[in-house]
Every structure is written in C-alpha cells, then in structure tokens.
Length: 347
Ligand code: HEC
Ligand code: HEC
Image (cartoon, rainbow, N blue to C red; front, side, top):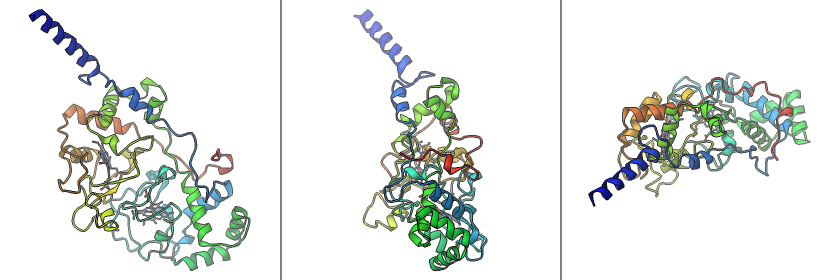
C-alpha cells in the first residue's frame, strides 16, 4: 500500500514538474495560446471607405499639415507623433495654451482593427468620426469645419488632390474624414521580437519572456482583456484607476455599474516606448503598471471581476516585464516616407 502511494506521488510530482508551469517548464497551454497571436494577413477597410492610394496619400498630407489649425501651428501629428509610437510621450495632451487636457494621447497603432467605439471612453462611433473633434476644439486645433473646408478648396494643390482621390473636386467634410481615416488605417505595428517567436523562431525571445507570456495568458489573466495580435479586446473595463468624476464610459452609460470608471483596453504594441501609461498618464513606468495589477487597483463595485491582487513573486514580475519588452521594436515604422502606391492594398 505504502509503495503504491509513493509511486503515485512520484508520478504526480513528475507531471507537475514537466507541465504545471513550475520552475522553468513551459505551461502545457503555451502552444494553444501562441496560435491566438498570429498576425492578420490584410488591413481591414470598411466597405463605405475602401482603400485607394490616392486617398491614403491625401490623408497623410492632411495628417501632417498645420493648415488644419486655426493659427497654423498644429497638425494631427503634433500629438500623434510617428517617432513616439504615434503618441506624444506626455501624461496628458497639451492644450493650445500649453495646459493639460484631461486625457493622454493614445497611440494610433493598429487603429484599423479597432472595430468598436473609439476614444478612451468610446465617445466616437468610428474612425472617420474622430477627426472633427480635435480639428474644431478651441483648446486643440481650433479650426471651425467651414474654415477648414474653405482653406483646402482655396489651395489649388489640395483641390487637385481631392479631385484625384474622389473623382470630383468638391472638398467636403465627409471626404476630409474619409481621407484621414484611410491614412490612419495604414498605421500598423511593425513586427517585434514577439512576432518572430509567434512565427516559429524559438530564439527570438528569452526564456524569461516566454514564462512571462505564460503568466500573461495564464494565472495573471492579462490576455482576458489584452487579447490577440493587437493585445486588446476593443472593450471597456474598470481596472481600478480612474477616480472622482473621471468616470470614463460611465459618463455615457450612467446606468451601468460595470462601465463606471471603465476605459478602453489599450493595445500593448510598442508599450515599452509609450509611457507614461493609462488614460490619464497617472502611472509613470511599466514597473508601476505591474505594481498596480499586483495590488489589483481600487476595489469597488465597478472593478472588473478579472482584476484582483496577484501576489506576484519577484521572478514573476521580472518575467512579465521581459515579455512586455518583446512587444516593442527598436525603430518603429516610418509612414512619412513610404510610397502608398507600392503598399499592398486591402483585398
Ligand atoms: C492635442 C493633441 C492632439 C491632437 C492635435 C490630435 N489628437 Fe487625436 N487624440 C488626442 C487625445 C487626448 C485623444 C483621446 C481622446 C478621447 O479619448 O476622448 C485622441 C484620440 C484620437 C483617436 C482615437 C484613438 C483610440 O484609440 O481610440 C484618433 C483616431 C485620433 N485621436 C486621431 C486624430 C486626428 C486624425 C487628429 C487630427 C485631425 C488628431 N487626432 C489630433 C490628442 C490629440
Ligand atoms: C479587465 C481587463 C484587463 C485586464 C485583466 C488587464 N488589463 Fe491592462 N488595461 C486594461 C484597461 C482597461 C487599461 C486602461 C485603463 C486606463 O487607462 O485607465 C489597461 C492598461 C494597461 C497598460 C497601460 C497601457 C497604456 O498604453 O496606457 C498596460 C501596460 C497593461 N494594461 C498591462 C496589463 C497586464 C500586464 C495585465 C495582467 C497583469 C493586464 N494589463 C490585465 C484592461 C485590462
């Protein structure tokens, strides 16, 4: 009898040692998880606003052109800076008067795959619908829409570019929005070390990062929200960050407890280069982000049930950070010079 128990124990211990995520062993679910991070083959463009090189070219020009601000000092790229992973590196975006807005500038990486509402609180129903707000807001670009359309129509090279892109010379709000959105859908995260690992190159990331990946998908539950190739479910959750009247999606959905203090799950692409973090820039470093998840944020009725104290060991924290580091490239992508005529169009 004693012998039998002993054998059973040995078999169990052996099983845990190989597959249970103990020590250096891989989680047995790792390969299944890996399969969920394969990159998509093409960029999705909506049927109402299909891709054309001429529209993308016009959209790029508009995105970088301060002609779209009242006093000619700001463009979309003032805050969505390509070399800063399409954010601005600030805790909160700067107003025209150099004060702080309420929100941090989000990256535009992989915006084409955000099929739900946009903005930290989901105030925008589509990518096309975003542009008019920064453009016309007095604290931001401060250019009323009729003035924007008037300026572009009066500029012969813009008039020609609209005529080429839309087979018609009229400069309308709808076309301005369509061109800007077409350009932004081309802002796609470059392949990072993580992607080379997903593609099968075992040496592309460290063993620590692989353990961090197991934790991210397993016990820490990060992938419940930061899911798939773009590391977001495009949905809204309270992770215990916002306080006071900063209720996020709750302002738009006042009857929902779960949406009080809920903000959109951000992509984690290039995350190492995009601090400070969160909708309000309140968390300075990735180390501090891990602290926050380890504590479990502010406990309250709206907090997501997936968020709870994790009690991570020092090694687990280091592994999670090593994993997050594999989501950044060293250079980022240069859409300022790429030729759209040579880019593969959507199907
Ligand atoms: C002053 C800095 C600033 C400028 C200039 C600016 N933005 Fe933004 N952008 C922000 C901030 C802050 C947010 C978050 C707004 C919110 O959540 O309500 C944002 C949000 C967005 C989003 C939504 C992203 C997401 O993940 O939900 C898009 C798209 C966008 N901006 C495009 C543009 C375009 C196009 C222009 C030019 C017409 C522009 N922005 C100009 C700061 C800026
Ligand atoms: C319940 C859904 C959910 C879970 C689980 C979750 N996150 Fe998040 N994550 C979010 C949301 C929502 C935000 C934005 C919150 C805000 O801005 O106030 C966020 C923000 C972040 C940020 C900051 C990104 C940026 O651009 O500001 C990082 C990094 C991050 N999460 C990593 C993790 C890690 C690591 C885990 C696991 C330990 C995890 N998340 C678990 C939903 C989640």
